[in-house]
Length: 382
Image 1 (cartoon, rainbow, N blue to C red):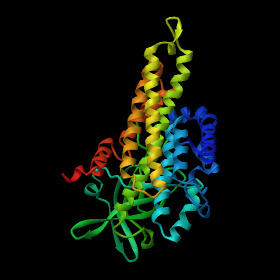
Image 2 (spheres, rainbow, N blue to C red):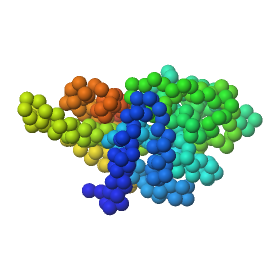
Image 3 (cartoon, one colour):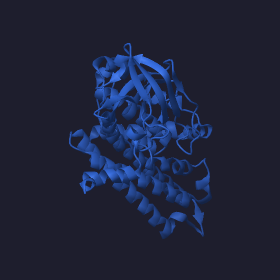
Image 4 (cartoon, one colour):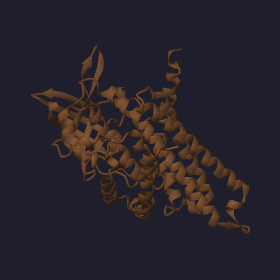
């Protein structure tokens, strides 16, 4: 049971998603166009500032508040939800967690109000799940500036008109024979920083995803985020938190599938009855609701531990694994219930099916989640 404050937030975002996002997002999706007007309204509502203090333009809430907003948005559309998730948990949160007082004053007020989007430059074309082993991007200090060279792949919010800064993970040296990875803030428009054209994607078509390249890109030495050599550790913490957020988004998609099916099976008739009359359909929807409910409990628990300052790595991995599975399974079942209409992009379940698969890949694949869970159980030492 949510307290009054959380429930009021949930209802507010639910109404926004139904009344503002739902009527227009299908057209954005078909045109593969970024929904600037929707994002502007989300900023005016304070969604981008939910977990940040008021002194930085935030709403003074917490990470669970962000998760509730993501779930409600994703019940209608995942492109809008991932834009918010990436901007907050991947773009702004590292600056809030690890930035200097000056970096926070410079970037957070605009990031927390949605006037500017931040991005998270970690993944590389040849890296995948092996982030440190696959990293090729380098940053070298030269005359008080970092000189960055390399390429980043699959970066969300990287090339919009309001993208302002990208946190770039780069090799900055070696320490005891091991790669030293640091994070450096690179403002949009910096010479040597090139944003490629949008990817042609299977899903999330109304969100922005790009490849980034850096060629002798120079930024001031003070753009180092946190301690030198702590970049990978910072991003691991960021990803742990982000997995709770992605789990919430996944639950939203899973619940959205239930929502759409409940409406459809009352309207669609076959053999003299609404198709919801038939037990085969009833059982399928019952399973879908059970998956969404179970996954919601998993991310609620992980968020509770996070807010309490207790270890939550295993619980975040469980939530992400269970919720992304639920999203994929529910999207498949919803498409089956809708039949031929489920294969049409004009119906939300068609978008849901296309959007669900990436949830088993992004911010740590399902295989990585299982690996993390096994390690937390002590099996990695056998």
